[in-house]
Structure formats: C-alpha cells, structure tokens
Amino acid sequence: MKTKWFRGLACLIAAVLLIAAVYAAEAEGEFPELNEDGFLDSGEFVYENPEDGIWRYASDTLKIEIFRREQKKPARVWYEAEIWCAEGSEMPHMVPNNPEKWFANKNADYPYKICRKTGTVLAVNSDYCQTRMQQKIKVGIIIRNGVIYSDKTLPAKASKFPNLDCMALFPDGDMQVYYSNEKTAQEYLDDGARDVLAFGPWMIRDGEMNTKALEKYGKSKAPRTAVGMVEKGHYFFMMLEGRIKRSQGDSIQFLAEKLQEKGCQTAFNLDGGDTCTIVFMGRQLCKMTDDGNGKRSGRRTSDILGVGTSDLLPSLDDPF
Image (cartoon, rainbow, N blue to C red; front, side, top):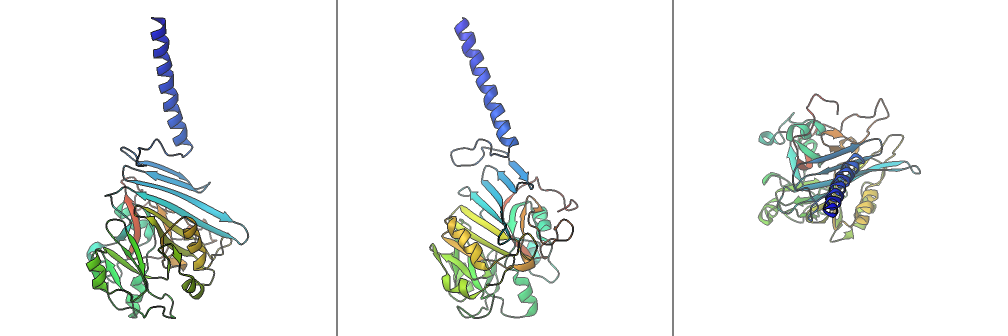
C-alpha cells in the first residue's frame, strides 16, 4: 500500500515539476513544448523582449524566431527573422492596405498600421512599386493576388537601379527569383504565381550568389531589406538599420552573405532606405532615426510582405 502511495506521490511531483519547467521556459522566452512538426497543438505563444532583442511566436501552423544582431566596428544593427510554416498553411505573401484599390492614389499607410488592420504577425517592406507607378516610369512586372498591375520592365542586367529583377511567390510556399525580363507577366500567372515583386537584384538562385549584380548595384551604406528561402516552408526575413549612429547600414551584399550563411537557396533584395522596416505583432522593431526613441515609421506603402495572422495585435491607436 505504501509503495503505491509513494509511486502516486512521485508521479504527482514529476507532473508539478514538468508544469513548473514549462512555465519557467516560457517566462524566459523559450518556446513551450512543440509537436513533432515543430508547432503548437493549439493556441498561440508570443514572447517580446526588445531590451535583449529577442522575439518569438508559435501557433499550430507558424513558428517565428527573431534576433537583433549588433556589431560595433563597423556599426551595424540588423534583424534576422527565421520563419517556419506548416505544410498547407498560409505562406509568405503580399498583404495590401486596401485589396479593393491596391495601388490607387493615396491608398497607402504605415506598415505597422497595415499589420494591425490585417492581423499580420510578421512583415517587412515590399518593392515600393507605387512610387514608380506615380512617376510613370517603367515599373517592372508587378502581380498581386493573381492580378497583373504592370508588365513593362527593363532589359536584363540594366545599368539602372533598381534593375527590376523579379521575385515570384507561390501559394504552396515556393519563392523563385528571375532577371527582369526573363518571364512575362502572363508566364508568371501560367506558372501559378500569386504575387510578383520587382526591385532587385536577385541575390541567390539555386544556392549560388549573384556575384556580378552584387558588385554592381546598391554598393552604398544604407538601410536594407531582403528575404530568402531555405526550402518551401522555411524562410528568412532580414532588415539592416542604416543612416543612424548605432548602424551605418551597408551594401546589398551584406544581407546576401547573411542569407547564404543561413542556407537560403533563394534570396531577393527589396526596397531600401526609408522604406525599410520590420514589424512583429503590430510593432515596428527597427530604429530609423537618432531623434527621440528612434521610432519614426517606415514610409507609407500600398502593401507589405507578411506571414501569419493573429487576433492578439494591438489596436491602431496604440504606440507603434
């Protein structure tokens, strides 16, 4: 009888210790126990530690881990967001401020506000093609949610920057990159692309760095944003701060090398400068100015490149 009682007590103590360990891990920002696919069975987990530069998110279809990296000489601060999406779930895609009037005049808002309106968990800036549309210059091949908005582009390897290389996003999670005129807009649609962005240059294709383009374009020190894919369902979003004391910025090649180090087989350069931003759970992570708290928002835009949705984001009126 005593043996059974001791066994029962031992089991109870073990259960209490396990629960305590889970809560302790979560308190320290570690992911709670995940299933064999690497996700939660249900619910959401959110951890935000701006002081240490660590952010985490998990749901039954999405897992995100973000680190702020810092370097003193030369001064650089950048963000590495690693993303895992469950097969069959919503993959990275373009999220509009207004899907009914995607690129209409004055239809733009700050990226953090678009995230809050749409419940987008993680986002970076897009190709900012709206400004080229307004200037009535060649926009590049632009497709959003299966609709062609522009099919006029530059010749491959043009001297102009951006050279309007393309990144195609597919509903199954595939991410492909091409030279500016390698495919027509209709060919992208025929291939099943949902979104096509034009900026460039493409950084990595089939695991190989686009060395000549990286030596040719975007060599100045500036804020940068780039995205990459290790394989379908596994991605990196990266954003480099620039033009401030703690981070001078760098060339496009800096993020290209970081993405290759992470194992990305595909990578693409998005718009830089004051367009650059990274937003998690409705709050902008990056610093853009040395004034005040440094939290000037990235430029108003018609859309963002986002992944995941949640009801836990703050309201539009909360500080960003």
